Image (tube, rainbow, N blue to C red):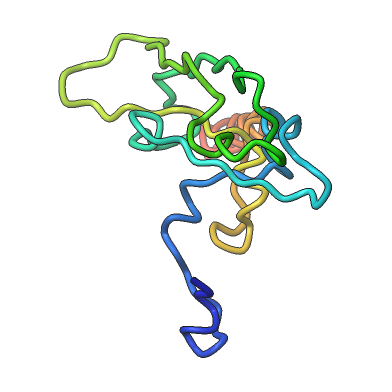
Length: 144
């Protein structure tokens, strides 16, 4: 289905794009990329239900193992019938209260690759500088 053609060649926002990761920003997918350099992947299950609020993360991903059962992506017709990624899990990194939202760190590449959607977001590397600015502001506030 050519979405842009069906929508008069206008830029079309498709929510599914927010649940896929490109091999150009996700290093674990880099090993799967073939000649044309394009590969996207999705993470169904609990991984698709987790949101990210930097600084409030309470869940950490465990990395999946990769086993393609000896099938080559380009030459084996059955290779697309299953995912080669198995044993992905999530672990609580702090106590989670009943009803509390589960939050995971999407990683800097997720936000950096979506600047047109989110704009500039302070990322983990920016936090020490922000802390310094807030500390200086707080000191000035006490002088008044």
